[in-house]
Length: 109
Image (tube, rainbow, N blue to C red; front, side, top):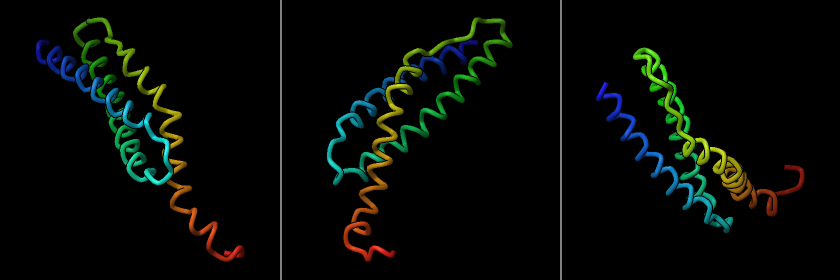
């Protein structure tokens, strides 16, 4: 069981990294930087999805040992706070990529 505890400690530290990445993404304000922020947002989305899978694995292992399920409210908070920023950066990336087509291409295109 100590291996599980060690893995959970490492996991908790990774949540702090997610928070730092989120703080960086929150600074997005210029369409010209959409590519960089969108890449960070996509990476964080993948990391969060992986983190929720890991929480499920922890909970399954805890159930095997009749331990109470661990909860990670910080992870939920990061995920909930991140969602609008993810939507913003991915939409900005799409807009920035299509802007020249919209403004310089024939209307029929």
